[in-house]
Image (cartoon, rainbow, N blue to C red; front, side, top):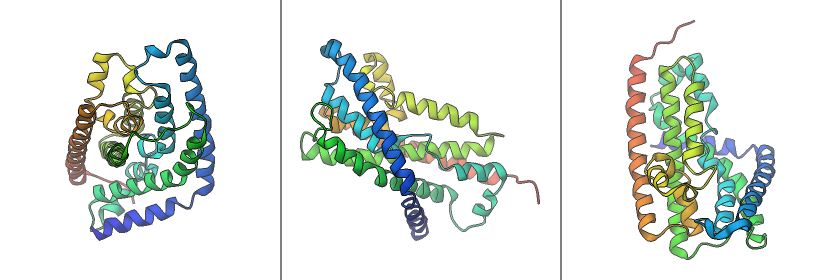
Length: 267
C-alpha cells in the first residue's frame, strides 16, 4: 500500500505545479458556466413550471459541475498511459514489483484531485457571491453536505475505474482512439454532463439512473442541489458502490489477462 500512496503523492504534487494551466481552465469554466446558466434561464423564463428542477438548483448544479470538472469528465485521461501501451513502453511498468492497475488507479486519482484543487475554490467562491438565482446556493442541511462529499468522492472513484477500462482495453486494440471516443461520448451524454438527468423523459431517466454513468456526477450534484428525495439518495449511493465494485473487478480481471498475453516487438 505504501508504494501506491507514494505514486499518489508524487502525481498529486506534480499536478499542483501547473498553476498557469489551472488559471486558464478557471476562466474557461467560468465562461462555459455562465453560458449554460443563461441558456437555461431563457428556457425558464418561458415556462418555469415545466421543468423538474428549480432554476437556483440548476445554477448550483452547473457551478458544482464546473468546479469539480476534473473529477467527472472522461476526456481528461492519462494520455501517457495510453501512449505507453501503444508504443510498448508499458514493459517498463510490468518490470516493477507493483500492480499496474493499482498504480494507474492511484495516479489517475491524484491527477484529477490536483486539478480539481487548483480550480474548484476560485469558482466556488465567485459563484457564492453571485446574486440569486445565478449563484450557488448552500445545501439544505449538514446531512446533505456530508452526503454530497461522500458521493462526490465515490463519483470520482467510479469515473476513474471507468476510465481504467479504456486503458486496459487498449491492450487488445491496435488503436485506442475509437474506444476512447465511444467511452467519452457515452459518459458526456448519460452522466448528466450536458443535460441533467431529471430533464429527460421519466422512463428514459429511470433507465439512465441505473447505468454506471449516473453514478459519476449525477448523484453528488443532485444531492447538493436538493433535487433528490431520501429514497432516491439511498438508491444513488447503493448504485455508486455497486458500480465501483463491478468496474474495479472487471478492470482488474481484464488487466490480469492482458498482462499474460502482452507481446512487445522491437529492440
